[in-house]
Length: 183
Image 1: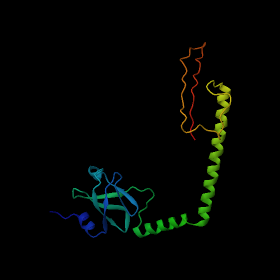
Image 2: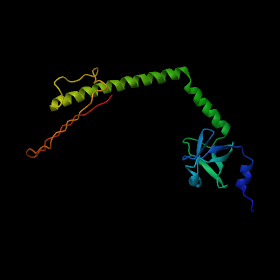
Image 3: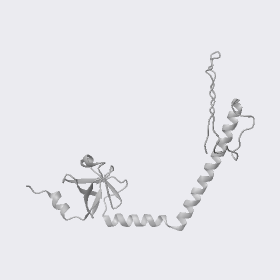
Image 4: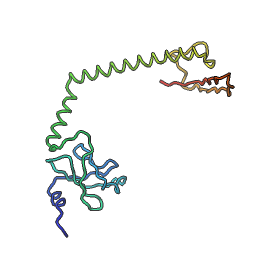
């Protein structure tokens, strides 16, 4: 039996048991993967994950077959930094999300976005209604339903289909179908 430097290194590193998922293993809020883990994906096996606190870009996973595999980080935007620096950075970013001024700006932005979406939906409804009336939709009654009025819940909707139309000259007549919209 020969000396394996990876086994020797992993023997002195901190670690924890994690479940092997289809995306690899997660430890310290980071995802790691290696193609050597593929045979065990989907079996939800617990594996020992050891990591070097000086460099979070790699972890060492003991597979269910007993082999030690080096896995790379798959989480985007992770530089080669220590675990302490990574945790400090995450705490700082979390604290930014709790800043009252930033929260107020975020809520105001979301409110403006919601108002704009509502305006666009309303104008789209108006444009559709006008286009339908201009096209002479013969399946609609004279009174066009408004946004406030809706059908009762137990009302059944019947879809009316039109028979095949014959071409008129060079242009084929357009079929008009009833369109159900849900809001």
